[in-house]
Image 1 (tube, helix red, strand yellow):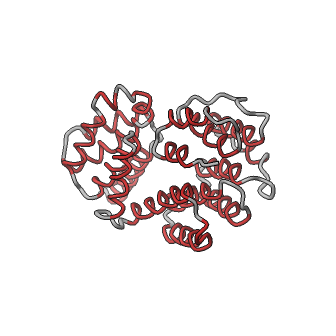
Image 2 (spheres, helix red, strand yellow; image 1 turned 90 degrees about the horizontal axis):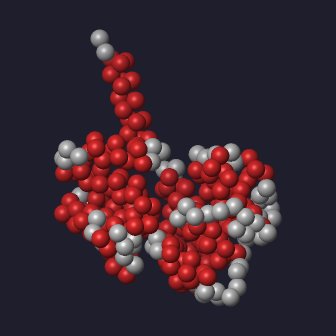
Image 3 (spheres, one colour; image 1 turned 30 degrees about the vertical axis):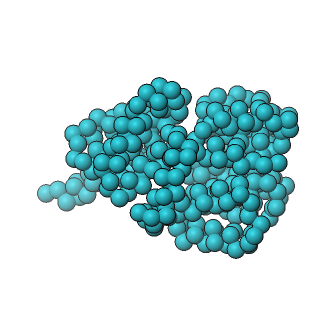
Length: 295
């Protein structure tokens, strides 16, 4: 079965289309179930017991419980790496990453990539690269991508290539490579071909990386238009924290007086957002330095 359109919609943030496409299928395999349940989680529409008679569905139920309680023990005890599928390992590795156990998350991904040929290995690669970059291990992320491409040679399908290209774009963004060339064009093409909140924010990130203030402001105006803010209200709500974070960066670049107000909005909406947490950490460190050298 060809999953290309489903994966393209998922990774471009077109979640409603993902569910519509999956509903049209006459079968339900682990790949369809994985993307269906991931989409329901993203839309905050997940309900326990949706597919609990299926092992992967059961694992997602445990993952959902973990997201509510932050107690990972039940999920961790029910997944045995030796027998788990790549999709099941993906769920556990995601929980490890959220739990701050980045080394274990990466180890789980690597185990799944190296020991399975079942569907879901490329998804594990993408997650592994995201985790490695989050942990500041850029060289490991690049090595994993290179090894995967070399090992697959001509066996990479179009849907695999979709995830490989996305992984490569993350590495380039993290290392400031091809910011004005291939990586920029990648996000620009995505935003034009699949005009969603996620793709527009991705392109805005590239503009902010280059300090293209006018272009970044143009995307803010686009996302605040009726087409995005009203007709795509569900996505607008979902991506609001990311939008606010980008607006904060833009406000800092322009020297706007709105910075503090935007930070307050983001903190109220998502107090655990990385930008807010890093800002608090830096403020604490600064206060400690001041106190240390205060006469």
